[in-house]
Image (cartoon, rainbow, N blue to C red; front, side, top):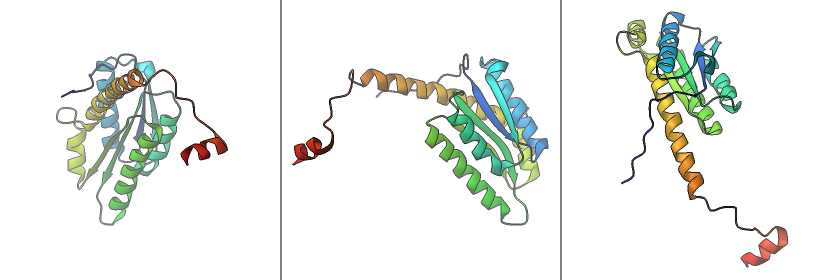
Length: 179
């Protein structure tokens, strides 16, 4: 069995963070702890770029833009969607989740889901509490590990590829060769 796992070393990593301003009393705590975790693991302040967006719904578009820019090793998405009395919670939670996943898949870059989806304000506050289980710090650790895992996989992939592609036949010649 071959086991691959990423380290928690963020030295030299560049990270984009997209953080929602809505529910700022929660998202500011997520952001603070996320940045602390990145710098504690070795990322420099200059290698971290934060973009604040109005709400969680706007996170995926900006995350996709950052991921496609080629400037970052990972993008971390932070927000808080708290259930209310309308179905708005389900729509936003679903689309934010889908959009963040899509940004990651399209860019082949770790785009990390650090968006709280809670039933109550109390649950959101608890998940953003630095003394307990701050999910912003968790998102940073996930980003670091995923960058390092992806680097391992890409390195192994490039080592396994033979030097140069086999010659291909083009156009009609290729069609005749298939017959």
